[in-house]
Image (cartoon, rainbow, N blue to C red; front, side, top):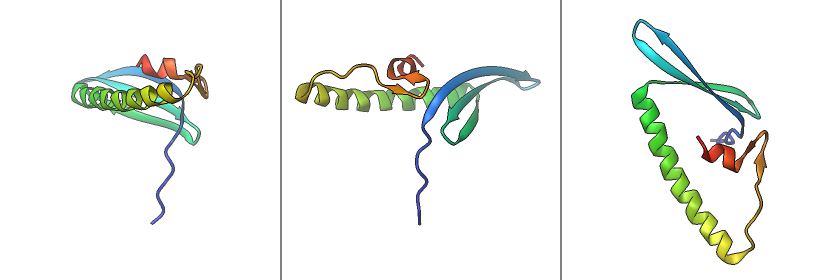
Length: 89
């Protein structure tokens, strides 16, 4: 079974919509393959924040390893987002 390649984000936008059941945030991620819209309520947003925290800690561990073996790299861009921009979310 062939596994799909991961989508590479190039832009991230947040929108909020409301209906009779309350507010939802729409996380719009433009990728190299098109736009991915994800609707989030507060529980889903908490789960995403938790997942991002886990990802950040793993990325931080790999950055520490890189810094110990090579010079610190400059800012790398992914499309219109830099690593610094992505971390600010």
